[in-house]
Amino acid sequence: MPRPLPGRLAALLIAVLAVAGCETPPPAALPDITFANLPGLSLDLARIEVAQSYDPPLSEPHVDHLLQTPPMSVLRRWAEERLIPIGPAGTGTLTIVDASIVEEALARTPGLSGVLRQEQSERYTARFAVRLDFEDPNTGQSGYSEASIERSITVAENATLNDRERVWFELTEQTAHDLDARFEEELRQSVPELVRR
Image (tube, rainbow, N blue to C red; front, top):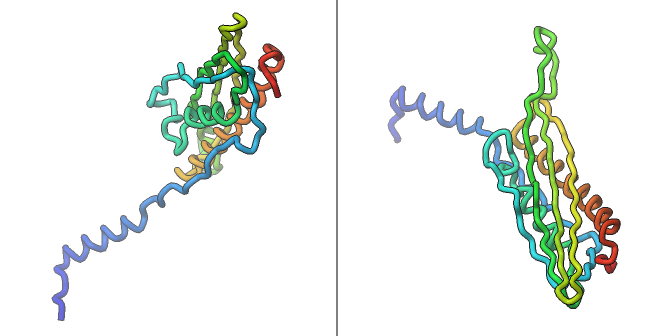
């Protein structure tokens, strides 16, 4: 028959188990953000390279580096899935100029009324911007087109980490699709000769 644990050891074991039971659940896996369901933008270029001038700060108030799928990765995938080179010559460079998400603390209602009500505590603002530069050495034609978009969302003070990650995911997805629409519009207006379809 096993001997009972000493009192202090038993209490310590119970405390450890209690803390383990209260741990935050692991983050829920989120789906991929993809643009494969959209028709490709066929461009009169032989090659399109993707570059970035945005350098994630990796510190507050930025949170874009905390996302399961950072906006930089989403915009790279967008460029690869949406911009289709079909021309005989010419090179384009799609530069990711901004892929940031910034957190801002919101003012709280002072006094007892603020304690008794659930309020929105943070605002997250996504700013995405891209620029396409292109050149055709055969014709000497060159030019550029650019687009930027901004979108914000707030979260409640009782939001869990999983809640916030879901909000960040939705903000990233919606802002990326907004940017896609804005970029196509700008491209067709500024350099219509580049767009084959």
